Length: 409
Ligand SMILES: [Zn+2]
Image (cartoon, rainbow, N blue to C red; front, side, top):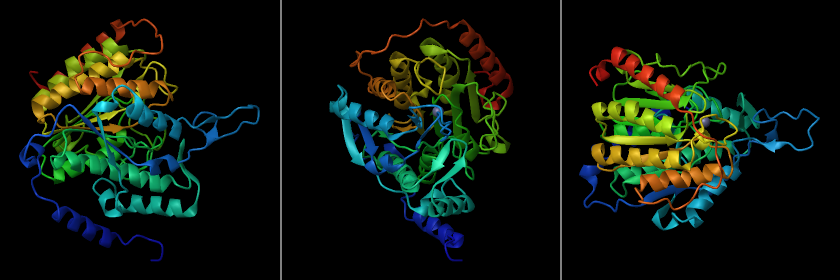
C-alpha cells in the first residue's frame, strides 16, 4: 500500500540485522585490551536540536491569551545545548571523548517497538504537526530527531559491546523512557534505552539491569521488558501515579512484572522532597542489593535531572552532590558486575542551567573523581529525610516478602 511500511520487509531486515552481528560480543570477551576506564565516551548529533516543541503554558502548547510571555515547552533544545556545552567547556571536559551519533534505521526500531506503532509515527510525521498525546508534539524535524536519538543510543551501546569504551553517555532528545512498545507518552516517541537494552541482549549479554533515576516512572522501558527475567528494570520516581491513557501505569510497588518477568520490575516511588540522603538510602537499601542478587552483565543508567531541587517538572530535591553520589554508586556496581561497562542514557531534566550542572556532577561521580570539580551554584533547602526513610524501609519489607529473587536478601 502506498505510504505504508511493508512490515514483512521490516521483519526480514531485522532478522538480517541481527544475523549480521557477532553472536557473542560481551564486552569483557570482545575487548582485545582493556580500554581506558576514566573517560566518558559521549555520543551526540546536532540533528536532535531540530525537534521544536513550541511555546505555551508549560507543556500544553496552549496560548491562553492573557500572558505576554509564553515560555518554551519544558523539553526544549536549550536544556540540551547547556548539557553539551558544560561537557565541552566545563572542568570535566578533559575526561570526555566525543563521538558522532547517527539516525536509527527503521528495522532497528523493531528491537523494541511494534511495526504498527512505527507506521503510525511515520504517517504522523508525513501528515505534519501533531500532538501525539498530552504534551507530546511531533512537529517538523521531530521524527528525524527521534531517529537520531534512537540511533545515537544504539551506537553508544554498540561502542561498549565492541570493546571500544567502558562508559558511554548518550546525550539525546527527545527522551525515551515513557515510550512503550506501541504507545508514545510524556514527550517520548522511541524508547532509546529500551532499544539499547535489546541490542545488548541480542549481542550476547545474558542479563541487563536498567536503573532509572528520572523523576518520572520509566513506564515505557518497564512495559517493554515486563515479561522478561533477563532485564531487571528499577525505577526511582516521584509518586505521581497514572496520568491518562498514554500512561496507565501507576509506578506503584505492586507493578512487579508478569509471567517469567514477575519480580523483575522494581518500582521505588519516593515521597516529594526525598533529597540527596533519601536517594542514597534508597540506592543502598533497595537498588544495590537487588543488583547484587541479579548479577547483570550490563548496566544502563537512565538519567533525568528532573529529580533535582529546582526542576519545574519534579519535586524530589536532589542536588549536585546527590547526582554525584548516584554516579559513584553506579560506577561501583559496574566495576563489580559488568567489567566497569555501563551506558548512560539522557532523559528529562528541564531547568536549563541546573540540569547541566547536575549532569556534570553525575559524571564526576561516574569517573570516581576524589573531589568535586564544580561547586553547586544554587542554595537549597534543608532536607528532612525521616519520611523518605520510612517509605524506603516499608518498600524493602514488601519486596522481601513478595519478590521471589529477593527472598532472604
Ligand atoms: Zn522525567
